[in-house]
Length: 69
Image (tube, rainbow, N blue to C red; front, side, top):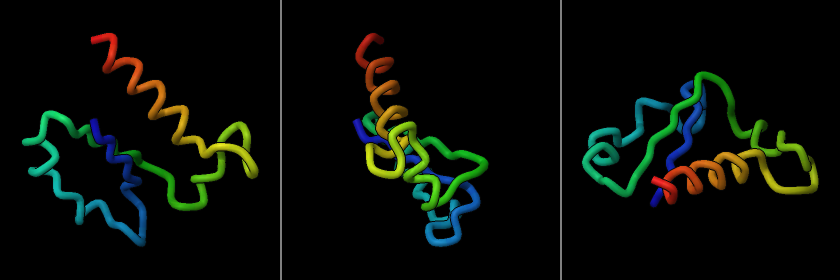
């Protein structure tokens, strides 16, 4: 399973560049587009700035949901 996590307002990797059709056609891909966020949010997790990024929690949770279903 591949999780693609993208902020719709990301200036470096704009949402318009997401290969949405390719992701939609692949049953092993999950696209999550958030309305906010960028690279600075990467270290905004509970253990920031020295621990794991906040995305670790999201990916761990989503993998758990997928494995149960």
